[in-house]
Length: 209
Image (tube, rainbow, N blue to C red; front, side, top):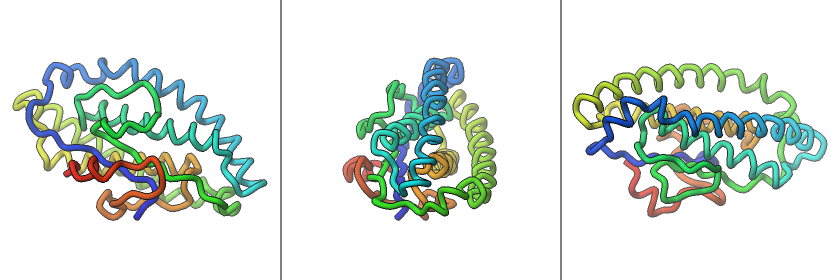
């Protein structure tokens, strides 16, 4: 099981056509907050990189801050890419009630300094796969946008690939944010499950399709 979990509840019926039509406009306030959060998180990751390199440990405060950014990004991106119509919270706190949930495990007791040092070199395949998943996400979202506008439904055949692509991109963010040492699995199903603290609850997981 991959240490960073991802779950998104599927709601086929009753999708909001109005907010779907204006989704990228509606999402602007969250995108602005996410950008500011990400700007600060980038400095936190740099500081954590040095801390990990010299001590092999991820300072808890920095870890929680970066983990919060990954959670918020996952929710905002899911909202922007039509996985849910529910407005995401303006923070990175764990929220089991929200239809899109990212589980961040406890930090490791010891990290590999070598993997930290060469993260952006050994992570090149992750970047390339992330690019592929980003294209998939944009294509299926565009088709789903039209489907929701005309039918009020999000086809499950489009939701599944979008959810899987979003999971990969979220886990890639956690990987390059130094929260985990493992390459993300290519598909959501390959990395199904939960690990560590702050992950989705069993009740929430049972609702995910």
